[in-house]
Length: 120
Image 1: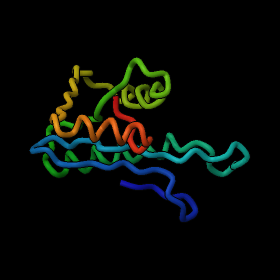
Image 2: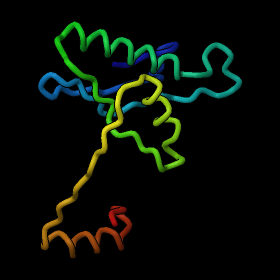
Image 3: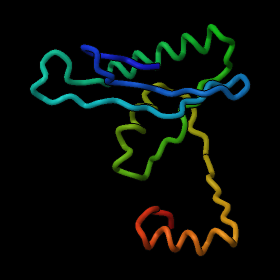
């Protein structure tokens, strides 16, 4: 779902299907310069996109909309968390696990020292 202003992409939300759950993948919105009087806040556009996603989900028989992870501890993610929480619903604990094979460990150290990746 994407929104444009004067031909420029200003907001986009990717979704994917998981049985009868519609899951949000990524949320993107462009912040306009303060001088831009015609359109300086894209949050309403992103909210409208969420409304359209809900309509789409209902029309196509989805039972739930999963907005994804809500990070309540990272100040840099506070705006996204507030945006997601503004729609209501339940916050369910999420756990992320990472598996790393023995053969990958030395490669990770090489890639990290070469500053190609930033994995802990």
